[in-house]
Length: 208
Image 1: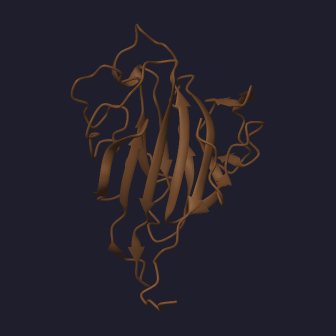
Image 2 (image 1 turned 180 degrees about the horizontal axis):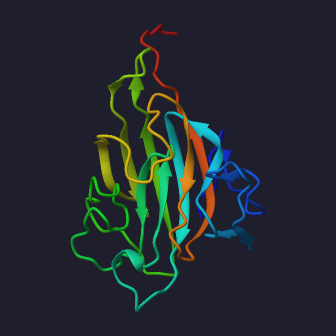
């Protein structure tokens, strides 16, 4: 387990889901036990919203040996509620595709299969650069994302063409939440936190 870094906003405290709500705005109802929350009825969204951010999420997949494809431990991590990083039991697949674990769903396959077997804890470390928009709310620069799964780079500064399926909205110039998807399987999450990143660094340098 990776401890939150200094300055991190802890989204899941290991005790309850008070920092989360459902799509309809009602409080989240996922069950929490022993520091772990298990997918329950309905997607949940963080109360905290963000633009550019570093996001850390740990997940564990149920062992479903008889299930196939999208029925095998399915969930998803939606950055800003708009861009899904697939969660699925894809362990052992030689060349993962756009629907496998780690994919930007239906847009980009992971560069490599970095999955661990079901029942083992896994992690996503996500560096997200939000899209830039002008005063007319037109996108001037698309979103970009880098993702590490279990310490391996699976997306390297990918330019995203737009939201994936199931996005909460298409308000691309606005901050958004982290969304964890209910796809009907008992996927578990723990140690979820983020760090807000500056939108730009300084353009000047004054030697000291």
